[in-house]
Image (cartoon, rainbow, N blue to C red):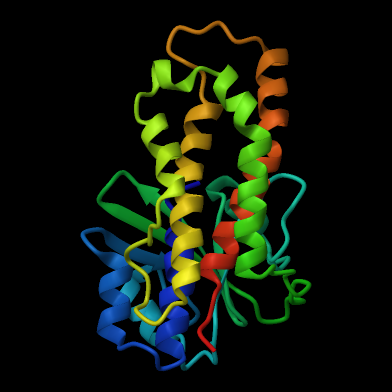
Length: 245
């Protein structure tokens, strides 16, 4: 959950479309050291470079993209385009605009393959219920407190020594790098905390090496951590979708 190319796309594509950054700034932030291609762009055959897809957005009438983080039973923010829901659920993320939705599929550490879904003739999704950044921050605090006993009971530090540092870092001011320069500092702080907790959840949801975890035990663990997982998803969505006023 902590690696969200669709979140970066939503933030940087929106910044470029609204004139808050240059095309080159947005492209550099979105590609970095990874090669990126897009299939399914209107008027193209096969895969095209991400630069070509990004440049086409204004001509398609796009003004803003939003991050959607679908999970089974909760696909808020996803239009009902053929094939979109299935691929977005598999990836756990999508960037949704007015005319296109894009789903990333990282291929190792050096390549991201995006699939574009044209939305012409598709009913738009219900407007997302985006909580305020302060509400998302408060919900994270409450969820961490409620999940503290579960996290301690999992004895994560024994198998994953990085966990104590991740949790301790929540109390220190932090800002997530790699976002447009004019983003609200509160959004950067919420994003940094949510990313740390997403890494903790990734570790908590995986079985310790050599551990014999029954299906019932795994289900109980996942259910106990669900409120924290939901709070992290809401915080990531609010932070990546924050637009300066």
